[in-house]
Length: 155
Image 1: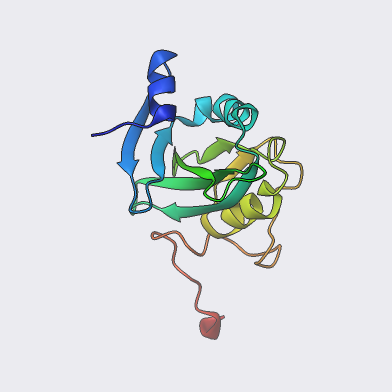
Image 2: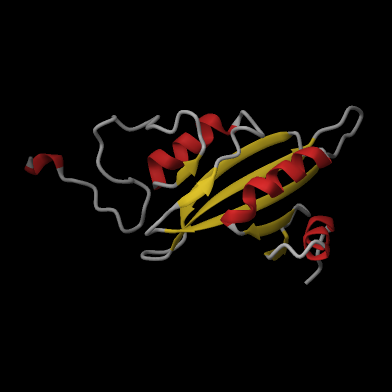
């Protein structure tokens, strides 16, 4: 499998990761360990990935892990096709904790809050990690595959 510049850089610096190769648009996709994510986020920002285009989360499989996905873009003046990279950070359902990148990209604020609200990933060091879509008294995580939605008609 062909590796991109980021995967090669991580190998050179002995950072454990997994390359998923390139998607149909030529964007490199990598899996990063949660413990390395905050340092790698800073490195990517310093390298020029100054825009968090999107962040989402999903339930990989019932009883398995949760994934937090970050699409980063390197925006420069006069560049028509900016570089992009996709980072996937996985967390086990029994302790779904991932470092927040709010302090690197402020646009992660609402996006990480939505992922917390829907899937239940706790983003360490996020300044306002609380529900954003569901009511504050909601119990559980609506988009987890092993979550059973309460039947309000039986209440």
